[in-house]
Length: 258
View 1: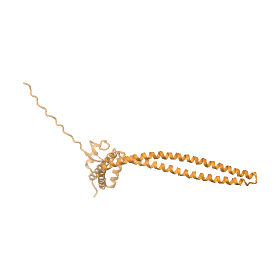
View 2: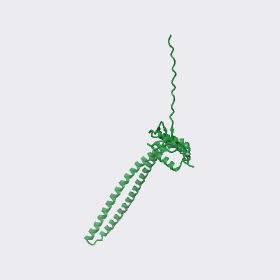
View 3: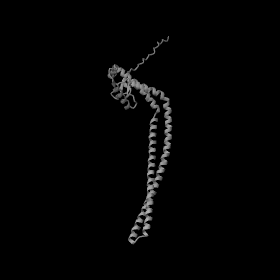
View 4: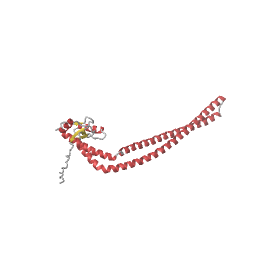
């Protein structure tokens, strides 16, 4: 059997009440959860940076090793060419071998230059790693402090929060899916998260714009769901303003002086 409009409004109001209590708990935590998340992301970024620097150093060290191997190969060739020079038959052969030796000596110089450049880069990367690790250590301390602070605050409200979450799950089951989706979407789009509000003093309890008397009458009838034409919030009820009667003090009769 489908719920009446009055029952739907009652269920929505109950859900809004529970969500508002959960919002208050979240406010107590403040920006701590976001700060913890930001610090975790920042730390992950620094750790990735250190890993990248270490990989660059590993590549440079491999390059230095290859350069040293090339130098040894060139030195062997030079020794070989020296031996060949002892057995040349003419100047042309001697000049050709000498040219090959010069080329290998030039190759050694190039490889030595590359080794020095790679060593300088490694030194620079090691300094960057040291600086990054120092910052990383500080951020980890900050994270630990924030986590402890958040844990203390969360533990104080954990029992209440768990109870509210259970109640919310139960209350949400009483609302049809389409209406619940609209409620959740509306809440997520509002800064104060109030999707269901009453009409107080003739105005919407969310945006405080005036609700016309005709709309107020329709809300009282509870024949259909009424939303604020300005902010789209669901108007649950009209809270009548209590008018206090002002009791006028009785006037005392004045006696005429004789």
